[in-house]
Length: 164
Image (tube, rainbow, N blue to C red; front, side):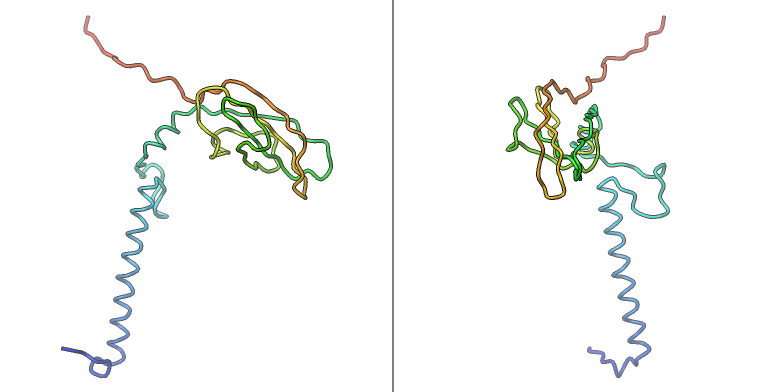
């Protein structure tokens, strides 16, 4: 049985289109809420952080146990500096071919939070900071070499209560 627009009438056709649109929008909203909850984000304006249940991935749980490190440097005295780059090398000397991140016009950074690409490692890491001017020229590199231990110690185990 095929129903044409003439048989339904214009008002009925418009009502049918609106109902289909509402169903599609509801489906999209439900899908969005599910994806947002899986990512650990609030999914709607009525939810508060107290009502929200965070579903953490293994990587998120690992990062929650990471101790943060703040690095600081003195600003460049040169005119035209628009920002800084941090270079790093794990277990070897840092140079301009090393991994890096542009951190903006700041003189301190919290690792790894403000530089997501920074490796969360145990061991020796050499850092280098350069000033960058508006053309992209980089200054000489100021270097720091030292041990990094981002992971907090494991929690104690075997906690018991004894009746005396």
